[in-house]
Image 1 (tube, rainbow, N blue to C red):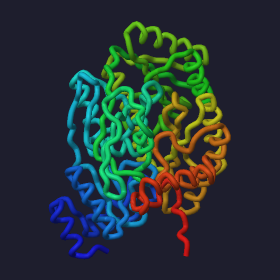
Image 2 (cartoon, one colour; image 1 turned 45 degrees about the horizontal axis):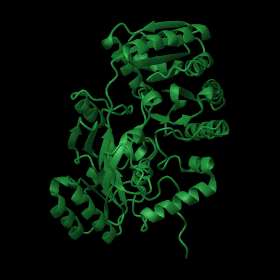
Image 3 (tube, rainbow, N blue to C red; image 1 turned 30 degrees about the vertical axis):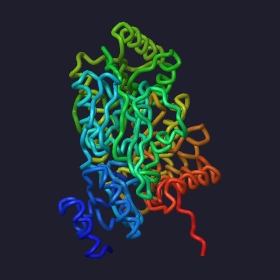
Image 4 (cartoon, helix red, strand yellow; image 1 turned 45 degrees about the vertical axis):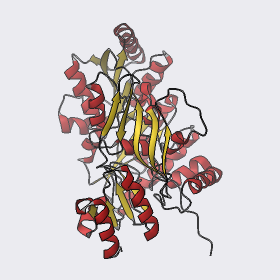
Length: 465
């Protein structure tokens, strides 16, 4: 517990409105969007300028407080939860877009800028920022960088890492840094920027970033295909890619998710279908027409039960919005939604759906699966109740066996949600003791005192007596 003197020091630095220390004010900062995780911090602070972040790091070191960087708290792996207490350093009030540089096709913004606000700001200047995580209306750019967030457009356009050109922030000893810049080519020294992206606040606190922008696509077409079995849907994905067509979006939902979404938004999705694919192609109008026809031909060849095309932009936006509501729709069904982030080579999608179905029956669970089919990135979501210990044990056993298959097939335990607290054991299974040891040594170099987001990604090394 912090002393009154320490609290007053923070209040003098930041202002009373930017310091929370009463228990009732701290409660909502004790969790993110991950079920079953809640750890109360000792204090929450809201810096409004980068210089304050460095001062806060020095303060935390002097007080022996762990530092947990946080954005909007939409993470799905417990990365922004203060497992060891300490100071939650919330960056949502560092929320200025510093520059949109049309000459260099870049934009610079602070870490607390909301993703969709950034997208809209650059779109108003005729530019395009492709990363679009499902939480884009709430999530922040800093959180996206920390988790290397993906999104619906990841198949064609990549993930957050592919658009970060420069980072500024503070290391664990209070030293400020800047790495990267606006130069398209820059291979000077180690690629620190690429190491910090996706590091989940364990290596540095990011306060500002410069992003690459691109011209927006001139045209797009949206198709919706329904399937009587999920295996055929998985085969359709592999066949579309094999036809050398790379859609901007290729999303999948299973029957449970279709029905939950239809209950929620009521847009006329056919409840009897086992799966659907939402496919969008974009680019030059001539290429879009050719690719849309090619996608339709593949869908017909593999045996899609029904294919329709969005009539206009509003209809296309409605269909895309229905995909974005998948998790919200599933969350209405049960007290707890336990969502995972299994990612496999695209050729294994059909087998993964079969395995999810087999395991859901084995462990007597209700599971809704949706995700980015074109990436092989699926989100099998167990609809459960964390107050039911037996059900939760079965849910974790379900994921344990599923990840055995995912890893055996050359997949990964996270495609976009990060490791955080929730997946440390899964990561160790994927990369082995040697890989974990190397990661520990990297963290030690960046953060010798171990104060930055301790306990995340891998277990802390036991201290010697």
